[in-house]
Image (cartoon, rainbow, N blue to C red; front, side, top):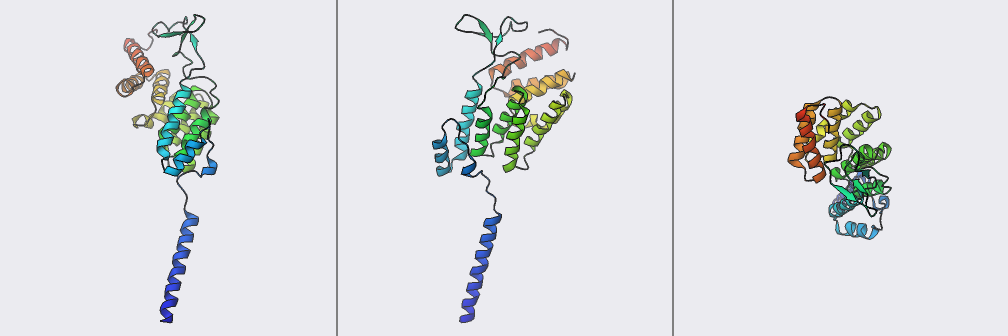
Length: 252
């Protein structure tokens, strides 16, 4: 009887030791609450997300906030520049017309962009599409590659095998070397992914056109027409396909 008691005690100790080892080696798939930096007075929502186990739902809400924030254009071009004749223009309070979709589309300071983009991954690091969108915007639209790399590296901290992040990191490296063909080639595998941001497709088409690979550019623009719902990207893809059909040297 006593030996049986010793056996149970030994089994309990083994179970406790196994549990302690598993607990010590377990790595949570989510950032700890102490790592979350809630921007725009969002701490209450974050607490609710953690309490309800609804990280993805709240990450979606934060992504909508990011899109709304980035949708407020900070840089607008004057509409009297060549090539703006086909665009719809905004008239400001002083009666001056501006184009929201010129060469500076998507540019600006947006000081809260990185904190907002990072916070989405703090809430749900599996939201890869948001990470790609944020990094592509920072690196290629706002020309802030260091911040894009910071965001991607944070995403890789919790998704170390996410090849899409690694691909964009490589593209950023090629862009620093001013090699458009290499950037286009590096992000090519992303274009077939359903969560590939349309801005990356647009970038790939532009870079292929710049590198003289007009057939690849046309294929990407056609894909944008078939898959995107964004009015700007649809109109731009239509115009670019018409130009490419007229020949690489066609004027706007």
